[in-house]
Image (cartoon, rainbow, N blue to C red; front, side, top):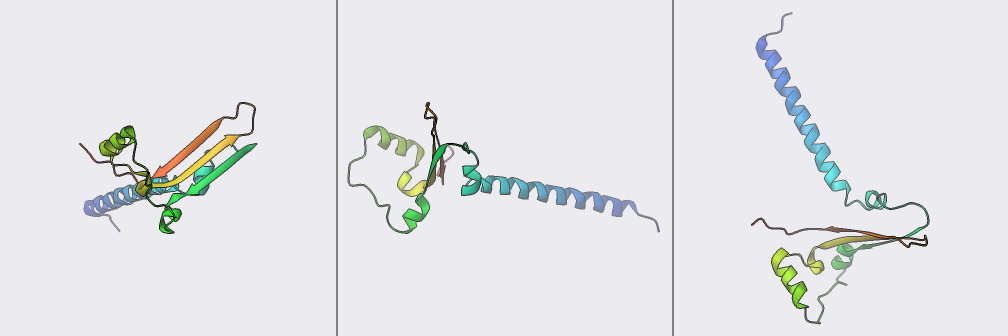
Length: 119
């Protein structure tokens, strides 16, 4: 049985397409995992720390996160106008970690649906 050049080319193209699809799936999975709470919490120290996680997406879906009646500060209003980011709408998760050491180091991570627009 002989293999033609056409079959070899098809095999190479098929392998390249498969490799590209596998790489695309891997990159998509890596991007998705960061917002997974278990993966997010692995980024914090594991010993002698207090961790707080608030799922604002669930709070928003429950109708508990409503707009504030207080007027916006001019600097925050300028930030909103410049970026389009509004924590009432875009903030999904906040995770905070405070170490119980004498220094009391503080770390936090925000996960948000960003409406960044290209200019």
